[in-house]
Length: 335
Image (cartoon, rainbow, N blue to C red):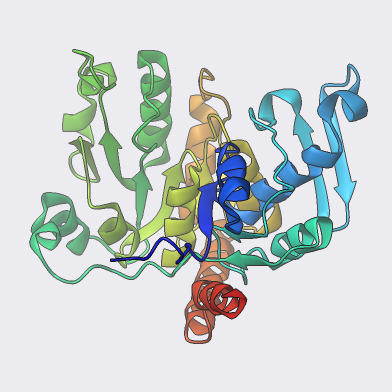
C-alpha cells in the first residue's frame, strides 16, 4: 500500500486536458504533457500558442509559417481546431519517432525550453495466429510482391455514396490490385457497400477485394504484397504505415490529418495526395492517375525505396536507448 507521503513521480496528461495543470500544482506533482499527434503537428500547435492566428493572418486564406525548421503554408480550414498553451508542463512526450521528426522535436525543445521525447515504438508484424488465417491475408499471399493498394480511412471517417462511387471508379480505371475495407457509420442502418457502383465487387473479383468491416491492418501493411496505403492520414495509421515501410496515397479529412499529410507528402516524400476535406468528392481521373503513379511508375518505386530506408532507420534507432527509456530515466533522476 502506498503511503500518503509517497507522491507520484509525475502526472502524464493529454495536451487537450489543461485542467490537470491545476491538480498537479495543488499537490506539487510534476506534470508532463503528452501529444498523441506527431511532432510536426505539435510544433504547429506550439507556434500558434505564441503567434495567435488573428495576429498573423488577417483576412488571408493562406497562412505562411516560417519559423526555424517550420516552413509550411496552411489554409484556414487546415488549422488545428484547438490551440491551447501548455507552459505549465515540466517537459513533453510526443507520439513519434525521434529520427523521423527530429527537426520538429528540436523545434519543440527550442521553443519551449523543455526536454521533449519521442516515445513511439516500431510496430512489428504480429506473430502467427488467427488473424493470419483471415481471408484477406490468404488473398495477399497469392499476389505479387509490391502489387496491392490497401485502402482504408480509419474507424471514424465514413464516405458518402458520391465519394464512394468516385473513389471506386478511379480505383477500377487504374487497373491495379487492391484491398478496400469499408465500414458503416456507427449507430446507423446504412450498409456502405451499397454505395459502390452496381456490379463493382463482381467485376473487380480477379484483382481486388472489398471487405465489409474490420481488417488486420498491421498484417496487411507488413505483408510483402502491399505496395501503398490509401489513408485519411490519421496519426496512428500514418505511424503504422511509416513503421511498416509503406508509402501512402493520402486524403486528409480533418483534425491533424492535413498536417500529417503535409509531413508525408512534402517533408518525408512518402506520399501522393488525391483529395482533402471531409465533404470533398475526389475526381475519379485524379484517383486513377495517382494510383497508377504510385503503383506502376518510378515515382512510386522511389517512394517505396525511401519508405524502406526510413523503416530501417527506425529499427536501427530502436536498438539504442528509446525515448520512453530516456524519459523514465529523467523522471527517476528527479525523484
